[in-house]
Image 1 (cartoon, protein in one colour):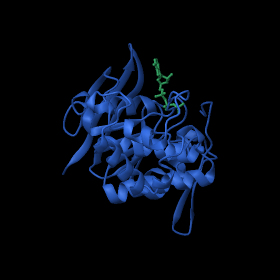
Image 2 (cartoon, rainbow, N blue to C red):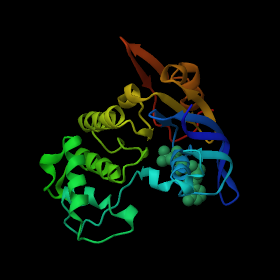
Image 3 (tube, helix red, strand yellow):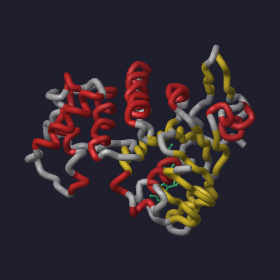
Image 4 (tube, rainbow, N blue to C red):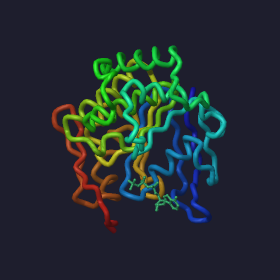
Length: 260
Ligand SMILES: Nc1ncnc2c1ncn2[C@@H]1O[C@H](COP(=O)(O)OP(=O)(O)OP(=O)(O)O)[C@@H](O)[C@H]1O
């Protein structure tokens, strides 16, 4: 069995304070994991460990069978708040192509032709080619998010970590971003971990769901995890998982207080 991620009793710290404790889970090649949890649950912290950016942890964590810091070239991490220098009027193609420069250690504006060609291929693959020449800063929030995802693909990652890619988007843009992620999953077979407060738009692309709240609450298939008694432990007894036809929906709020 080829596992992309193997975590066993993983505890992640900031100095000596435990941020997330005792995570045990495995993810297979090509699977998409939806990572759920309330504010402060530890979702970003876990992504940063997997990306090799945070190394203060105990327990076992293997990514492609190695320590995360040894396999950073196989992993792309898209943080929640993406900051670009908006004083520089970059085109969409510039923004995407820059994703192919960082890993080479080249940060300059003379982008090699082969990198531009690859950028156009990725934009075409994601149905964004027609906006390649547009100014990035003039795009809608939904378009920007899809371009940022396109940019992450420039390094040919085998594991894509996305921190709340849908959070700033309206319902229509959420659907568009979800179909972008679905295409990446189906056509590229990239293993993905996506953090979200709203699992509903993503349920159909999630092979696994993990619910954390400073520790592991549940890990399994969407049907195994998204159950009243499990989500109720974190989000309170009013939380419900409901079926409408074939589709599972989760009715939860984004809690900013702890329900005990
Ligand atoms: N740089 C830091 N130094 C110290 N503690 C931190 C740091 N970053 C996060 N924490 C703490 O670690 C815990 C987990 O935070 P994290 O940002 O990973 O949660 P999250 O689930 O991503 O939250 P949100 O949904 O609000 O983004 C929180 O208690 C947070 O205060």
